[in-house]
Length: 346
Image (tube, rainbow, N blue to C red):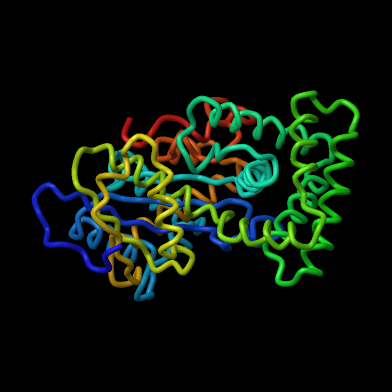
């Protein structure tokens, strides 16, 4: 990809992006259970004015104001303004949310069960059906083994892919087979989920050669920033304008990761992409706004997962959240709270 933006034209659409909750390919038993990726379409002047208002009203002496500032309880009104009708973002911003455990369940099925990718690619036909089955499996496994029990199985899978030696991979693969076997034999597990679990179990390599090949194939396939970037291209690429993405410096967005995100399109929505450039967030106020939004979305979503939702904040963030987010309550309500609703600006 080009490393510097082209000469600006009247029709170029430039969006700025940042994320919150990234831990690379460590998806469970880390610091966060939720990943959020935000993209904004605002002018530099608007972004500068917004950051200055946040700095003044939050009484922050920091050179670069981070999302943690607007998330402080004493700055609640500032956050409500930022996300609300009178703020600078509504209709000009988009968020892709990822429940990391659900995302890892999808990768487990895709890499070991022989299915296609129901999250990073276009969810049509069999891919949409696979995504539905993954969600049902995630729910059934959580209920059958308990949240901690299913997380332990996912952690074993995560450890196989991230193993640094054959011995480590073999130990984790052995634990993964035990966990999947226990789940498949669990009374009350829906037949569809049992079938899917047994398919995944059969795909866990046992021989050293197969295990090494699987680790090599899985490396780089777990990071949720890849489908998040694909969503940026899908959402903004539909505008009919050439698209340039300005992104906060992110080590995991390698050339290979970008190619994967771009290549996951089956309907041409990535054709609009002219290029991607990386900047330090302190040098671009638009990226700082994306940081505000990503941080707020992740915090609000994490509280929903924990059963501690703030209904007023959920209502404020919902218009920004992609309906293609990797989230269980798409089109449904979780404890009376609808987090993922209509596309931004709808």
